[in-house]
Image 1 (tube, helix red, strand yellow):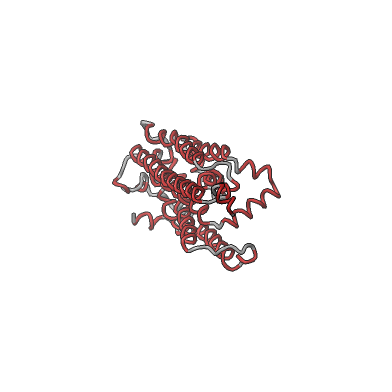
Image 2: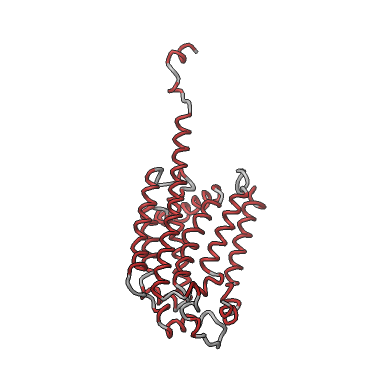
Length: 307
């Protein structure tokens, strides 16, 4: 592990440009929800719980797209798959749950005024379902994966598209604005199950392929080209770092790949399972509230007559 910190540059290890971007996002969040909130709404202030969730989302995105995990993920596919869980299954739902409803509503309405056809397309549940799972599955096809790993710029663009697609998918599972949802209650639970089914082939490919799939982790020459983007200019890539330099007990490439597939599937299942519990709780609370309300039709006729 010491070799990792000795060879790789500060930028490769800590991704300072990502830290700067996420810091600006955090500052914008607190300015909008605190200092300038009164310009947009009279609703209650953000709670500390929402602030913690938003910061947790930023941390998860940092772990998914940067941090030392970024460089280690170029050596071990299992770490790379764990990064995917952080970025698209932890960060995005935390953002959606943390952002104030008035802000989400204003953005939704603004999009409706400016680009309504695009907004309606983006917020359609079937589009969100297909778009994210298609991008996620295509990403893990070996020829696509190796192509992206060797081209950081294209890789970053693809990751941004996946993040947007993840927002589109999670929007319907968490339903932050119930009055603007296509899906309600039981259909949301079915939607979550559908996402779990569609993501399974990609995980199954990684786990049950029978062989290591990615040149990035099996071909020393290819790996050296990939790692060249992570080290200071002109520095040589030590061959001892190939395969994770004994990290995780020195797993062979296929075992490391299987571990990554299992970690990704288990992480996804845990998050989706928690989301189903969240949706079911909302459903029960709604039903309980509706049953407890007393409307004019609930009052016996003889009482209404006496009045």
